[in-house]
Image (tube, each protein chain N blue to C red):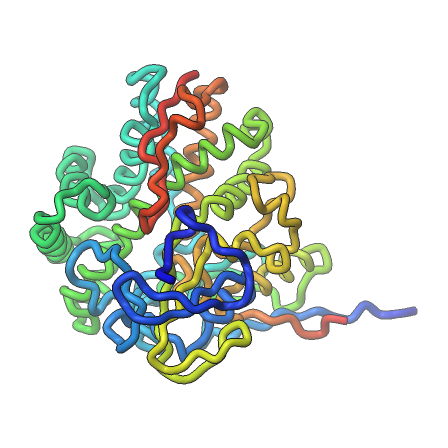
Length: 379
Length: 68
């Protein structure tokens, strides 16, 4: 049986089962919370898509990923990740940048009026504005940047133009690194690592591209889905009044939607054991984060509570950001974006609600990053 | 009089991937994001928060010693 995305065909939570990767060979589908944690911590399982037996999926967007930290293992991965991860530690994030972005998109929503689609009016510009701030792009350059990164998150971007867009963005990042002279992400990367010669300009650009790509589609998807979840299942007045309750509610919508629904994937480079099943070298492993996030044993919650959105029983014990050494590097930024934006929106629009019945919403169930195609809202 | 066993938190920086923080006990290095233990001895009031951080750490870099 060929692997299918969680939101197309949710697998039961249980021991690893054999599946076939969409464009690769045999793989083990891992669904239990403890097994996903174990698999993503196993040094015998590689993230290298070029390794023999890697369970290739259909969702390869963009050309080059070699040299990107998401494909490296062990010490090589750690050394590269440590050049970037400090930039995304909680105390290094800029709440003013994120608040300004949230206020900007709330203004846009007010101007667009009731009935507007939250995805293009709020979710996409929110994440684009934050990325522009991270890359040090001034307001007048943001439309150009948005055009340059469109291929990284817009599922309707023409396939024939992907390679050119990818090359164009990597060239743009390289030029931005050459010119970087401020004390910001690009400036520090250029001054401390690229110019001294221990990180090539090409690898710096490739990993910045990874960070930008990873921050766009996942976060814009979560902005819309998370808000839908809160509007349907939470007392939004309480979330505005109680910052702790809002943070907990955000953890719950992250867990529930688990938008990264077709991976992470690995390939065994040595014989190992996952969830009690022998995994031979050369066999693939596909972890289902949404399935693991519904495992009552792993999350210490009832199956009923985990089936829906239960902000009263929510916690941080979930794997929506993955696990192991590759766990999402930008998770604190993602949380800050969601919490800040929801606080601003629910304060400015206390009667915010979907403008159409639930059955009229179209979800992209087969996308690598699950999302809602449009979310019209009113207030 | 019974003494309360001292609880200490230990960080293995060689495996840290730089994503978790529990205020008042941990910080992260400015350049590499690697965990820095601010207070090895765990204040009993922070015990639950530290235990959660140990459980959530994605690379098993954190552990508690002296836990009864």
